[in-house]
Length: 418
Image 1 (cartoon, helix red, strand yellow):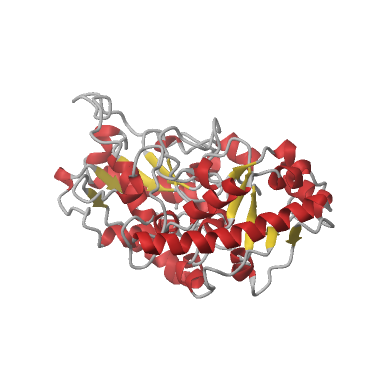
Image 2 (cartoon, one colour):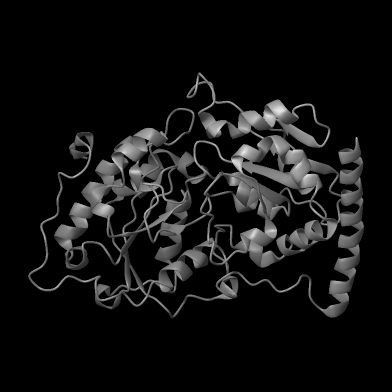
């Protein structure tokens, strides 16, 4: 009961203070305080003029034909590979002269092979990727001169370029050997993991901006829900014995807090889901099969403080977004103490996190809008690529050092023709 009273007090104070701060900000001519990430004001950076990208023109079977066959690819959380391709085709950083390019982009839609229920299966992905690399290496000279070190690929599935949806098997496969020197733009991020390549640009999963925009409610709506979560706690179809899914963290949330009045948690996904997040102070963002989910994006967009439960997670655009300032990190083993941890956060800290989350630049950096907008996720990716320039001396091979591509490296199943 004491925790409940404390939570109500925090909510009341937060609502009153937010209204007061909003009035003060209007009088001062700005809405929120200035935000600086760990790398400076990266959110405001404009990468145009700092790099040039050449987009390979691949046969449509690698991308557009797959999408035409199944347009559902546009709506799942891995759709960043499609929207990044579309963005680059009309971006000011695109060059049609490969000789002046800083980076080469190979548009392969590795997650557009869907089950009847709409879930991507990555089984064809390595064969597609291998075939695309062979094509660009045969028809252009640029891959061979660096073994792909000045090329980047978007590999947004759960375990990136390991191309498997089960972690143990993904680890066993490892990253496709042909991609060992390339830069990967991927959603998967966990420190010291086989499937997170060193130097990868970690991005948020795709969440539909227009759909979220349509569910916005007035900014001064009281946040009357203390902790909110909707989603699976157990995945009995893929983890029948329990305990492996989410490393047990989600199960622990349910077992410990299903009857706690501070926690509004359920497996139901109501029509008011987006509105409910905007009425919540804290939104749980626990790992699932991978460390991240669209909840992280949704929480930031809706100003709900993300409670990140995923040990060793590598967050999207970590050098641009001050995650420590806007979120709360809870170790997986500490899930049984979530109520104590969250009710112990001082009111002024809660208010500061809410003010930071209210900054439009923070939300924009997590989204892939159509058309692109300044400071959005597309531009954060370009910023990541620009920060890798100029390419070092070790990127380009010396004349005579070019090696024959090892097409037989990797699991035997990947060697089938595609």
